[in-house]
Length: 138
Image 1 (cartoon, rainbow, N blue to C red):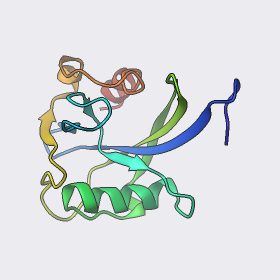
Image 2 (cartoon, one colour):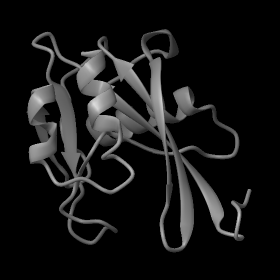
Image 3 (cartoon, rainbow, N blue to C red):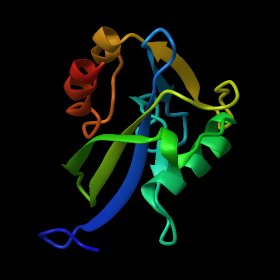
Image 4 (cartoon, rainbow, N blue to C red):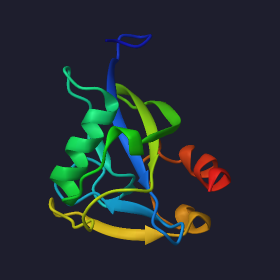
């Protein structure tokens, strides 16, 4: 799929994991990855054979060692952002129920963040418009 101007469109699913205290889990991109050091909502690329929900369930298991179910992923909003070499389309889901304790499995750092403090964490440009929507929703 390509966007206007010929840039390829990349579909990435992300999730706002929300704990019992109303905090949101952020993951810091490790060194060696693009946008290293920036904080983001957990998730990842949607493969050709996957739905966004299936991609999130896979990514949460691989990256954080937790399991959730499609019925626990509530669509919240999405981001559409043009980077230099691709266009990102990113649905953001909210999730309050999962099994296990989120544990960094890919060298990332994790932080549970109060919604009012999300702006204190440097994030990729595509994630920034999601913050006020998430804060208003919580």
